[in-house]
Amino acid sequence: MEGFVEGLLTAIQPINIFWIVIGGFLGTVVGMLPGLGPATAVAVLIPVTFGMDPTSAIILMAAIYYGAMYGGSRSSILLNTPGDGSAIAATFDGYPMAQKGQAGQAMAISAIASFIGGVLATIGFVFLAKPLASFALKFGPAEYFLLMLLTLSAIVSLSIGKMIKGFIAMCLGLLLSTIGIDPQTGIHRFTMGIPHLSEGIDFLIVIIGVYAVGEVFYNFLTINKEKKNSSKENNNMGKIWFTKEQWKRSKWPMLRSAPLGFIIGVLPGAGGSIASMISYSTEKQISKKPEEFGKGAVEGLAAPESANNAASVGAMIPLLTMGIPGSGTTAVMLGALIMLGVRPGPMLFENDPGMVWGLINSMFIGNIALVIINVLLVGLLVKVLKTPAKVLYPLIIMLAFIGTYTLSYSTVDFYLLLLFGVIGLLMKVMDFPIAPLVLALIVGTDMEQNFRMALTSSNGSLGIFFSSWISIVLIILTVLSLFYPLLMKLFKNKKKNVTAS
Image 1 (spheres, rainbow, N blue to C red):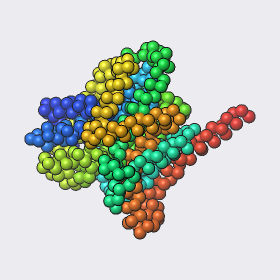
Image 2 (cartoon, rainbow, N blue to C red; image 1 turned 120 degrees about the horizontal axis):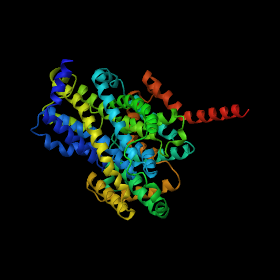
Image 3 (tube, helix red, strand yellow; image 1 turned 90 degrees about the horizontal axis):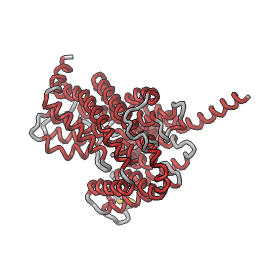
Image 4 (tube, one colour; image 1 turned 30 degrees about the horizontal axis):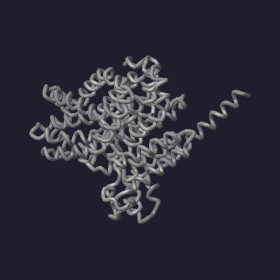
């Protein structure tokens, strides 16, 4: 309690509240921009932290981080364009809600879900930081491979009625993840003699291409239909708060997904993308109305938004307790802290409790500030959908190209962007799910390397994947996730037969 009170007094200092609000606002704005993300925002602002008090510096960086988790869903909902990987799941039901004229309600429920996820995860941080950090250390290459396999199987199983197409999309994503230099052997794979591809294809290019550019291409094909429906779709754009029914349907998914996202966030390398996908899959599988998912189900938006914000808080645990970055953003933060003379690790809680507890308390304040900022911005942002198509679509394309160019400042990425835009269009026309492709590309490289490291450490024996209770639990969950849709279908058919008889 002494450390908690000391941290609270640190967090409520005017200068730290100023950095919390500024960081949260900047994170929200950056999170909305395709191709950017919290890691980019923190990296760009590292020079600002030079000369700052280390506690204020980490409070600012953390505010940018979870602020971007709030903002990433804004472009997902309004434009079907995720700000970064963790906001992909928000497109599944957030964008359909916007098309139904519920953009304001979608963004409001998204803000509240992010708030609940962030606050519950921060409470978890207070009590579970050290035990969860110890649990994360039990994950070896085999466990990480199986965790990623579970994530992919869960997202494929969501493609009810088109699981084969989902599996094909996943395989395409895994194939794309092999492009570039093999980290273990140094051999160039599938680069076709193009030096730029030696580093592989950045998953953000694929996300922007298949979602943003692909969506624009698709809308050009269907623009006449859109004009007929536009007046009907825009009727409720000014309503910026959710209904009692929407709250009733989303409150439990928010509460369930926060602990799940928090635990996944603690695992180094897992991140908000996996947390949001697993939470979405879980909610769809336990829902009484799974057929509404993908068509504007409010719980399909609330669950992943709660999970990815909770994951961003969870990712701070391995950073502070072990000096191990739990995500790309915390890796950037680790570098910044070392430059500021701070050495994260087991002794940080003992040597500098004021910093740790000040950060924890700042997260409570930051989430309150962010939910206010994001709810106030809803009315302004919803007007984006009223922008005429001839203005909006070129603007999306422009943002997509700017976001892509800032990744590595190479014109080769422009050609890749257009290629994946065409792939996104074809997948949409042929009704292929896009999420399995993107998620497979995100986790593919780590999945391959963990698989190979596990086999190397066991001299080629597959028994290593059954050598711990964690591995066995993950295998069981993977099998259940694949067969769950089939079992549910058989159960429903049996129930119909019983009712009919």
